[in-house]
Amino acid sequence: MANNQSVRRHLDALTRGRIIGKLEEGRSVTRTAIRGLSSGRPRGTTPTDDRYIVLQARRNRWKTAGEIAIHTTQVTGRPISRFTVARRLHGGGLFARRPVRFVPLTPAHRRRLSLWCREHRNWRDNEWGRVLFTDDSRFSFSSDSHRILIWRERGSRNHPSNIIERDKYGCRGVLVWGGIMLGSRTDLHIFNAGSVNGTRYCNEILLPYVRLFRGAMGLQFLFMDDNAPCHRTVAAEQLLESRRLAVRTLPPVTIRELRLALQDEWAAMPQQLIDTLILSMGRRCETCLVVRGDHIPY
Image (cartoon, rainbow, N blue to C red; front, top):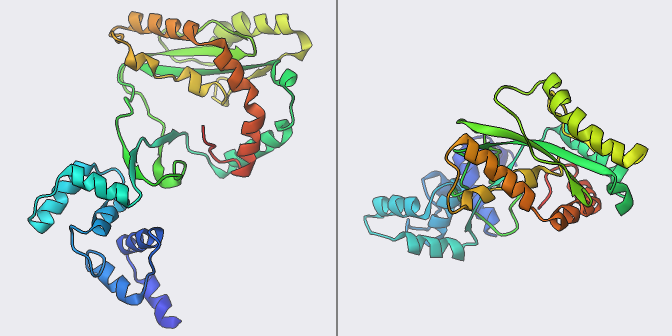
């Protein structure tokens, strides 16, 4: 027992990663195998073996099939194509998929999400129907095309190793705000240049939009936003960050064209899609509780 503990203490991070890869493939790990892993590749394999190629992808899920093929060719001196690499990775249960983009959740976030979901898990449709869900989102000319892929197994979409932080836009763009509810939506508000503080949020959003909906709904009206410093949602995010602009025949190239394109896409969004999203909130609450406040599948 003492010897085994000593071995575990002295394993470097790379070797531990290789051992995890073997376990994920359903193979046993012995002390002899550990020595083989420490030497640079799994004991009893050659660089052209399927297991070795799969191991490369597990170590660095961001490598493309072409990069793995180049590395394997350099090590062995024998050429191997990226198509062969892709076939062997598929045979090992790894497939090229887009990484999930989420805002990182802290333990405090998860506790608050779980509490909120417990309070709302049994709400009826008419109760969700009086909520105005709102959010803002920034659109930029350099927004991510989502062409980056990672190698992952089926069913592991939300595993921490397959999640990356949501993009930060670094070039010119526009900040928009919108609200959705059953059977209706607000106009899409586009902020002029400058940061949005509490005063601007009150003058440009709460007074002209939220007060209007509250007057129409009466005392039953509920307003939901997110926890940004100048205001505070979650439900409208996917709709507001739609990437449909990226597939337009003539993508916007100026701020004015971007503003007009965003307004067109907002107006063209089917109300049935919005209603379906809102009515799924009960199910989403249940799923969130199952994963203890962590990210839930779409």
